[in-house]
Length: 120
Image (tube, rainbow, N blue to C red; front, side):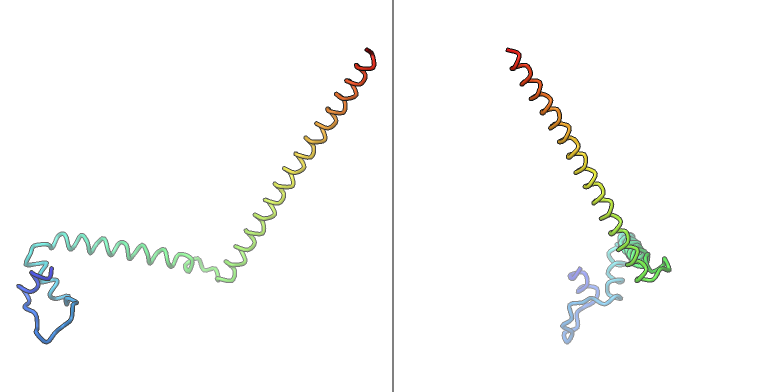
């Protein structure tokens, strides 16, 4: 956009700024007939900005103090740790039960094999 800008708004020799003023940009957009494209970009930018504002204030709008939110989060983490520990304990118990059952079966098999070998 710098070339059309120089044609439509001749540069000021004393001005070394690289930023185009809003009025110059508007004039270029009108002269080059980019009004529809510029409006579409502007609307997109407005939608993105509005979405960011809504997301950033979502917790603030709940009306719950930050301390309470922190307490609730810590409570949820504690509950999750307890549930995980209970699940691990249940799994350990299941493994131990299966191991004992296998040991009993092995002992029975060994006793039966000894009885069978005594008969010969």
